[in-house]
Length: 419
Image: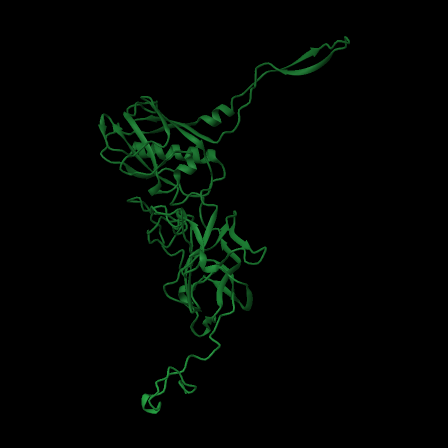
């Protein structure tokens, strides 16, 4: 595939600006189109190149409102499995461990995780009656907020004999760096404990961030799990009879998808790392053929791009005629933005209903058709002459005369062979 672009020279013989807007695309265009998955037919405006020419698409600009969450369906769920009151669970259960939404501080994520984990554990079968979270401690904050009191003025006497006051600490303040590590402790209460700390009867707790459930391990700084059949702990879990402490191995992060990927359905000569094609498939090669036209950086309010130079993001088609095109948006794992792969959902962020499985349900699945999931873009279409085609200049060999006209002499050619 890569050797299809060995150009002898390049000359743009025609350029066309192609303006795209996917808002209301199913109403005024193909009924199968969505705001993030667009199907466009050129009808009477087909673009075609000749011998020695290729069609090249370049992204000039792109804008999409950032109506997505930092924490969404792809990085909010994990699997828990444990022993409750001496009875081991037969299988892990997938739970939302971080509530979906935008967070601006990792300590907010840590507290939210502890709250959701405590509620998920309290809902398990076999726990003491009325088991609920009594308190949550973010050990990072408790250490940072240690109050050091007592300031005193003392007199410093230098060698010259004069004295002047300086301020010293009556107690030592060593300072603590912010390491962004998850470190939370959960204590529990029961109906019988009347608001006091109580035994939770939970042992052998494993919190597994499986790659099949998304990238929660990136958010919480845990270790990724790649095998759903052997659930391994993604965190360091310390259990006492009345509390559970969870510590992350690596620094936490607020965003797991800093870009959105604009992809094209047409065959082209681009390449990509195999993980960008899918995280569910094992490829024989590290590099595979790509359908990516561009990747656009995320900001607080939008996904926006304006080309600073010509052909910063481009693709060269492997076909000579352009009569239709499909443009769609994905994350870095080729999943619909904000949704798990093959979920079939039309909403990536919005008002949720009660979940009955690991699929997150929304009140309305119409964000990509009747809501605010859409994009606008300008694509430059160039017809590029890459070489001069070599055509046959001489006449082909003539056909021999019929034997009846050759006076008994057979010949292999005649000036009038093809005439």
